[in-house]
Image (tube, rainbow, N blue to C red; front, side, top):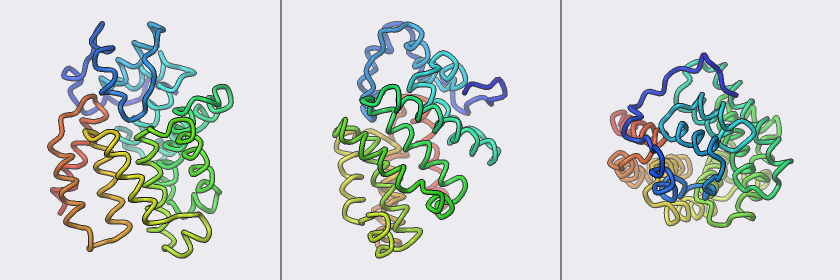
Length: 256
């Protein structure tokens, strides 16, 4: 939920400010990853304007009770918040918000996807192995399966499902991953590829595919992963979230 102590997003939101009709005109591109429907409610429109410009606190406030509030909380936690304990708490808040939406709007694919996203990032924040022991593997997979059943063309859910398979295999191995969690290398690659076909200009889909290839295949796919990071680094960000994703791709290239 929104908090006055949330720190400022480290991007210039001026280039991704969608005043008035500009939001509706840019909507399809901005939401090619999650297929969110353009809201009729003026407050929700304003919440999404704030989200895309990187004002996540305002987005969470204005969008309380809706998907935008969950997404703003998770993206703020993932990209902006510096303190590890606060990050973890924010992901827990986002899971709680998303869980409420899954119950009140069971046919809303993004409610299920946002739960899976928050839970996945929560798992990474406390350690994937610990999260698996707490039962989050099954919860994340079930939420993503529901999201993809409701919307088979949900690019972000395909990316997240690819990451689910890759993370499991990376942490517990291919055999244990398959037997215990249904994780599969081919399925992982298939979901990543599908995500990029659906949303080819997505920095995060490109970056996550690169991350996944390294988790699944290690040095064998380092060249392909590097090309993907390079591709993401050269993309044009459509909103604050994508601008931060692009910066993370550039950071990956600098670390090599």
